[in-house]
Image (cartoon, rainbow, N blue to C red; front, side, top):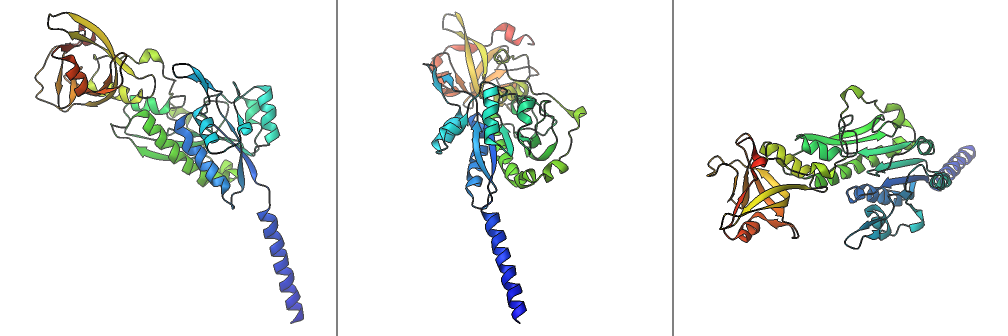
Length: 363
């Protein structure tokens, strides 16, 4: 009986000692890299999870784009991620803003932090080999597409422009080749024909933050690297960065193609089109208007023709290729705020609205 007592006592003492050691074990350092507002959900997920007493990691630093000039005065402002972190009380000296991720001073600072893992989400900077060699558990990226589809800077915008009905988000290891690393996890998401790029991006990063938290324990213990699936590079497609030169709409295309472009380019650079405003004396004035919200018209009894734009059902109906019609619901005239089609039409005060002849050469 005495032997059993001491055996049990020794067992519970050892167990208590083990649990105390486990509980006080230092948390692993994690570094997050991101810049735009759409990936705030990823930062919030990491901040909240790291505060959990049972968490085995802590957010040791944030890396983001340097402050940039914004607004009329071009005042230097921190990136949305940096500002959000500051608002959350994250230490300013732990927010790093290198011009390039390969800078020697930045890499030295990163090494001093000793990150076990780095996580990226729309960071907007190429990570060199010297960076990727620092964290022992590697660098993982939340990419808003179903890799290997839409590798590149604008995956959501290019997917919407192509009119996809399904996309998704991938959690993958970062390698030197762009968005080509092994996939840890992914999730499919249906896409309707109304959602715009900023909203879809926000949704996908939120889903991606859930994937990250679910897989994080396996990433930190190395199991994820063993199970990650190589990408089929033969199925890869690219998603190059949008340019301002692409923002012009051509009504030589069908309404569906134009609508997809409007919602894809909704955040930046937007889409614009030239219209003729015909006054009561028949004089024409060409104006360039930003088109912000559209839909594909299902109207079959439209009383119009040629290059004339008409107003019906609270929308401007614009003739497009293939006898299709585009409904413009919201637009922004030069020097004015975004307004409804109704307000714009009323502002014409009886003037007619037409497409320039060269904008509708198919008619």
